[in-house]
Length: 104
Figure (spheres, helix red, strand yellow):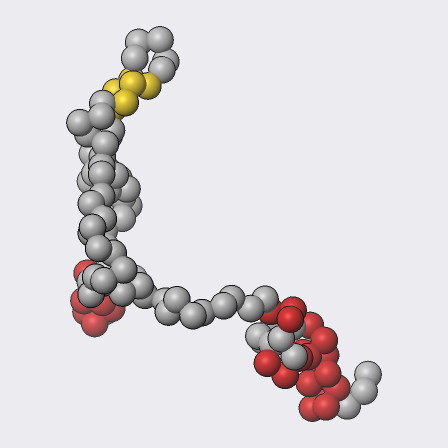
């Protein structure tokens, strides 16, 4: 059984996996080596290969903004009232089940 033409065109847009190509294809993680292994099983960092990131001098006055607002305060799920909790709340699921299906 072969997949249809429309299914194959959708599969081509996905990233390659090691099962779709011949031997010798190594996907990797996109991270480069920052050192080398020694013959005694250790690892030596080569500081010229270590990534460094430059922070703007005037970070507070910069036009760069974070993805999340600075005034955001995380709230735990259990601190919310029951009607605002996520769909995985067990008591709310049972309550809704009893409302829709009657008591067991």
